[in-house]
Length: 64
Image (tube, rainbow, N blue to C red; front, side):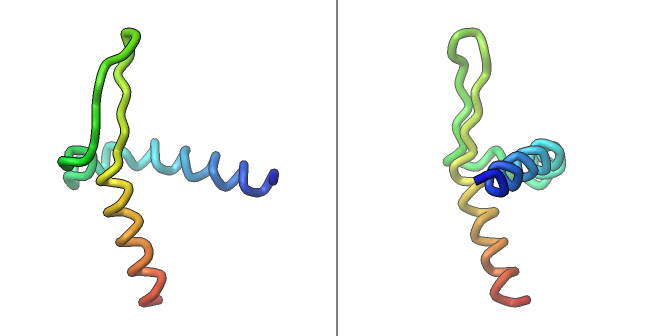
């Protein structure tokens, strides 16, 4: 259980670090990505970007 928590924490840190690069590539502005304001804070749900990145990673894993 602790190992999975560490993996998730590291993945979140890497994603937040790579977010500006991914936005320059066009990810984060796809039609299935949702941005909204609630309780004075901006929330972001990258549904379409997550699917695209998952597809690319799975293709890379099958190739290599």
